[in-house]
Image (cartoon, rainbow, N blue to C red; front, side, top):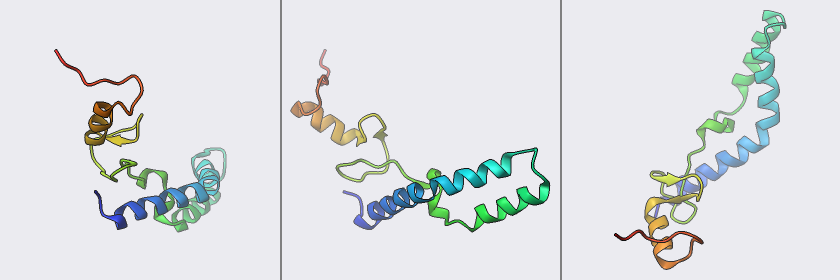
Amino acid sequence: MAKTSAVERNKKRERMAKQYANRRARLKEAVMNREVSPEERFEAALKLAELPRNSAKNRIRNRCEVTGRPRATYRKFKLARVMLRDLASQGQIPGMVKSSW
């Protein structure tokens, strides 16, 4: 089990990313637009820098939904490899069986 504080911090980042997504997208579009004057682009870059760091989507860590483990997480299942194996062995994941040869 991961530390509860780390899991909660990541949840906070997810909420902030969702909250600031539209604002961040508009400012980023203004910064990248070459047809706008350099002064306006610079202003947009400054406003983008004023937004909270944790509102950036790339700061969100993929974590296991069950244990909160940050590494070896399968995106498709949102589970760590350990939990994926356990749940597959128990038959909890439809269509997945433990291999044997």
